[in-house]
Length: 344
Image (cartoon, rainbow, N blue to C red; front, side, top):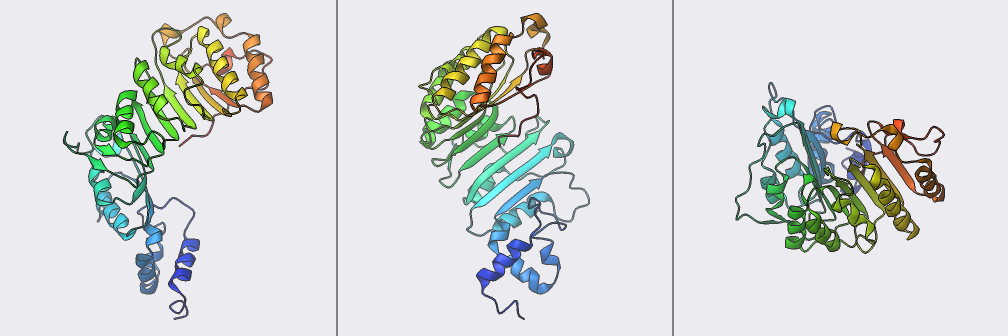
């Protein structure tokens, strides 16, 4: 009865503070569903406290033997958030997706327009796990701020969306053209500050147009798999008129020896312009037989010394890769091969 006498706002804060620190998942072993099992009074408070349901991280797995499949739990969970801004993360892998029941992604976005952040990670499958939109379908999502879709159907789904206020756009392994069309259709170019997973292979003109459209970009993650040295997409970063506010640069790229001076020039010019502060490079130079180069042709000490100077001045540089340690000079003691944190 004492709890009943407290203001609703205070009761809500109590429940928020009693939640486990784990990610909110639709499980009876985690909050808020765990709290709802304590007694009928607590269950009433939990179900009425919409802020407890405004964030969910759901992993679709084997649904056999479960009384309520994940898709129904997800819809029920999001409904309890009422009008609050929702942060939604969906995960899955090929091991379970064949039997899992995934709600159509666009249906979710249409039914819950208060979804502000959505991140979808579906790995190891080419199966059509989402119902694709009709070509004429256009869904406008003015509240959407974050959109990340790791799945091979990302291009088709992105083509059906318009999100004028999106600030984070992540569509790994998608060519620049669909992302460019999305930004133009949405009028979101000036708002986008993070662009993740851009597949830059053979798309120089589209990439240049895309980068011109996002002058406020502070984080850029690019992927490229060229078949010859100094790919044009990579050389675009030498133009400081593109991405003038870039702070964080991540490159997943099979480097050739001739490209290390270009990489160094990018870091020097953008760092000295007092903008770029962090660079993550995944080196795949020796990950394919056609790209293998003799170890005596790796970048020389002069290149590493210039990189050390940038690090000493404050540049946060992380270089990783299958053979990264083998290409380091023997006296290297600055450039780290430690795994760097994810940018997501």
